[in-house]
Image 1 (cartoon, one colour):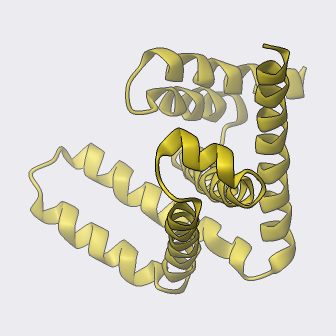
Image 2: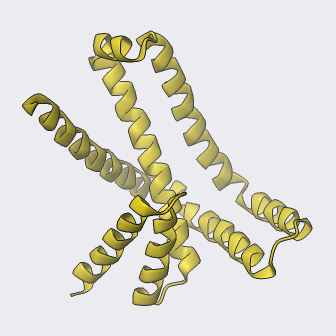
Amino acid sequence: EGLFSLYSKMLTGYFFNAFFPARAGDLVRAYLLGRKTGLPKTTILATIVREKAFDGIALLILFLLSLILLPAAISTASGLSPDVLAWVAGIALVAAITGLLLFYRFSDSIVRLVERVFNVLPLPRKLERLIVRLVETFAGGMHIFKTPRPLLFAGIISLVVWGVVAAMFLSALVSF
């Protein structure tokens, strides 16, 4: 019941992502999981943001691998040199990882900066608090950088998931 119920909340969020702009289904998923588990919704939303960051990094790694393994097919489809694409993807990958590490290193300063910026902006106080709380929760969740094991585990899970998706699309492409 527990795992199935949590899984159904996750799929409900994905369902809403198909119909609402700006990944609003992730907000629905955070709300539903928060109600089900009793955890703060900002904690769940910060976990979703970290999940998306790992997904992006995994996709960049798979893109780099595809540039290495299939350079002719990619250069024909895009009109760009695989070397140029590889450099752009490599720089984006390094920038993403560096950005996460910098956020981890300077998370307290970033939280204070976000608080100051949102104190100046004419936003509803409740929205301002939600955004600041989300940044604080995200910063608190960056403890995964203290020890490499959870970081490596999360990265491997993202790579495996996206590898399965790539294999699914490859098998569909080959079947056609």
